Image (cartoon, rainbow, N blue to C red; front, side, top):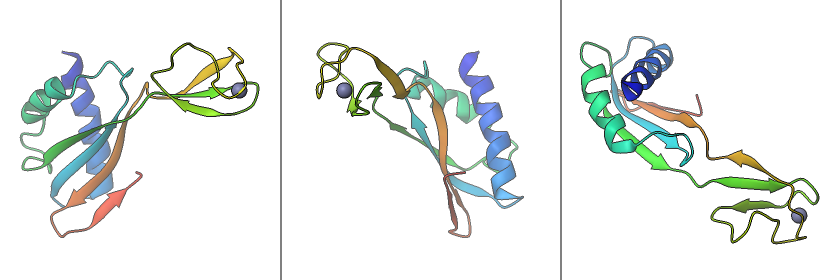
Length: 118
Ligand SMILES: [Zn+2]
C-alpha cells in the first residue's frame, strides 16, 4: 500500500523532529501532482501511527496549488493554466515549480511547541 509507506517515512521524520516528545498535530503540504489522496493518506496514518509518539496526533492535509515558472521571463503562475504558455510573455517554455510533492509542513508537540518548515 502506497499511502502506508508514505506514512511510515513521514513518521520517521516526525520522530526525528519531536525528539521523544509526543505529537498532537502533523500538517502536510500536498501537491495535486504528488499522487497522494488525502483521505487514503489519513486512513493509512490511523494505522501507521499506532505505537509511535504520534499515536494521538491528528493529520492535516493542506492542498497546495500546482505552480509553474516561465523559462523566458521568470513569471510564476498557478495552475490551472488555460494553455501551457506564460500569460505574461506568451512563451511556452514553462516548467513545473511545485505541486508534485508531499511535504511535512509542521509538527505540533504536546507541550504546545510548533516546529515548522522541518
Ligand atoms: Zn514568460
